[in-house]
Image (tube, rainbow, N blue to C red):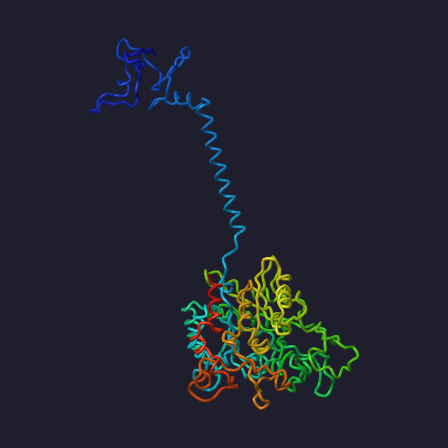
Length: 565
């Protein structure tokens, strides 16, 4: 191929073939189009080729340049080096952004769940609100007062037992785990309450009572008659009515943990009342029954469980005597739980495996966004704080979201700042890394903080409760500063109080004080209450305090609102 320059200096090739050319009218073949005009030289390719003997002298790239020309320029250092710098700079920036994103995600605190952003409010249903005039609070009464929780910015509500029960221990002696006691309403009432709570963005936590049942439960009646399936559902051992008990184990309520049953001819274990026989969790059928009950309520839509008295669930199979606190004390005078070291009746090997299994069952219902199922355990371990911390689980296996922290219940013993610091550090200093704290200053088993510490400290204690890191648990009436009532011997309802009047828990269970109306607004239909109303209800009640800017209720609202923000 030869070339020549036109007057403008552009190189022109002669007789260059174009294999893709075709006449406008479709005439002519590729061969014809590729034919050279006489006198012109034939070229081997449609591409522009450079004579190996000639050097290409084009000074600047131009639009439409052939591949061979483009490659000549792209390989030059002034084009190649900037291109490579830009490429590796892009790679480095991308990797840096990925690393930064991972670091931020890893170091940022996780989003808080519903049980972390709100205080947990405990309702004792017998005392909260009576809707039918029988003097006992009920589920419909709770539903009537849901606006109270919205005002307080409280989203998590724990309701003490409302299962069908003979009420020997006010619901903690369960006759049927799948039914509502008529005293509190019906299953339809429960479902309506739960639906209304969820519509208002509230969560319901139920009491779950695994350690024992009522002696009127169907399982116990079948077990005492030695039904093959139910024979070992409870802890039985040989004894007779006149012989000494199997060992020195003592009930929480006092006296022996063993009661002789004439129908079966053996003794059964009860770590609480004799009407509350202990289940045998070494029986696989019992374990399955309790898991089925958990599923029953989770399918109903319950948001969580408070696991009651968990340290008592298992006991040593060998049934040996427990060591006495005072070895010199005559064995026959051992009548209270404080007389023994409970080495064989609490916190036994296998307990945490049970709880972790229940946690796993609950987790299977927690997969929907916003439907996390919460689990808290109750265990009074007193000075053995390390035992309490075990309920958090391990780094690999989760157990409860937190165990109840009862150490602030000791605040009234010493109201100094150093004592408060000690109690707070006792928990925070022993809590496993990465876990969530909890704080309790009152419940249905302990005197109200307004009575034990005094009205002077109510505001500061409530502020402490709501500002410490973690989830505070508050007992109904604490938001208005309710105090214990005085109960005469003839008015005692609590079984513990009937055994020992000084141990009665009735004073902290008086009816909620809603207004200065009859019965403090607890029962507006009849002049009946299951326990006396506190005489100060005309000045200490929700209605009065809502009208004041600097009341206890206003404080609780402001502090709860700050937590939410």
